[in-house]
Length: 93
Length: 416
Image 1: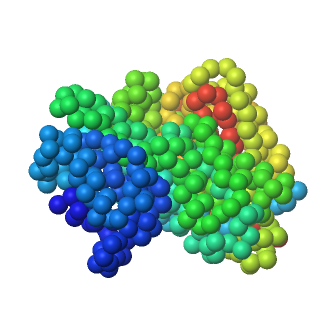
Image 2: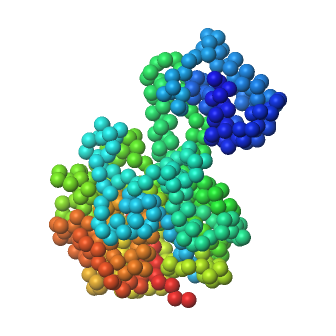
Image 3: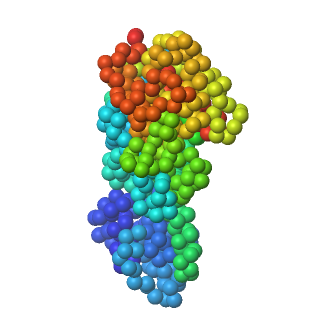
């Protein structure tokens, strides 16, 4: 779910090649986002879950999977350990 | 001192999504003024607006989708102007090519959305944090339009933004003229853009008591410059763009020339926050004529600032009398704001562009809804209907701003 939100954003809005996501060990650096691009990507999550993700630049040294896991941990930390179910109207952002 | 030519025009306005349809709308006296949409009318049922004829994002690549509406308008107008000028992108002389922009209230939509979001979240009291888009600041900065156009076309000369209320883009044109005339640049694209038809902004405008009241029979006839039954102005939105270049540069690439940008005048009233003065307006008009080396009688059409406020219309009429003297009544004057509303920062560029199209076509747009002329406004205001088949050698456009800033521009036919 969370992974799909991020992937869909990157493919549809940031023009990241969908083939990239088949690559094992894909890193965040491989996405070739500039610093503003990285912030825009995180906003897709922040907007839906209602909090600001701290220290965004740390993601640049992670794999894509590590980043998703890290963000998921942050979301759970803000929602009593749960992943909130997003209503679709809100998910449109 | 270099001669400066206008080689491209572009526009998206309440009258049309491009310059041809906008000018046609002005000639047909097709008013774009209407009652505000429901999100504004729910609190301001009397307020009128002149929305752009098309949604700017529908005319742009989706990567521009998140930009402030004013920036999107500027990109649309720039697109048409650069194509019109047959300009390569990036140009070979990119470091000699500047961007000059005028805007009254940069980032109005971005800011209105930002505060709506903030207060909605706070009032909902769900404990949720307020999270704003990370690009909120670069989207709402006043130079966002200049930056977007500079990046899109690879223009590396100066990119300056003028924030001079209703005179913003007239000043931007004039300052670009000076930069090219004095050799700092060889070319520039000038942008005038404005997008502030938001609930918050219109609440503020409404409080100033300068907005037109809806005509009870036909809301589209509510803005009546130079008429005894005037009631104020209507805010519009949109953008216009002009490509300027030195005569040498235009010659070298055999560019299509629309007009010569002859002169620019600017002054400050130093009197009152909102009330205009004859002295300041006359100074701006005389400077523009002097730079263009034209006698007033050599100008056949003037697009007036003409906002349909009592003080504005009467003062401008007196100023025109002062400059033109005994020949004032031979000058054809119109205020197209009756049709497209007041585009504030975009108004100067849009109205100057319309004036150039009037000169080149010989068709002068009318002052619409002027059934009951104000006797204090005793000039040839081209009432109600366009005038065709006119011999026009030179035109002037006036933009007089709150804060007392005045700007006048003169264009004339180009003879090499």
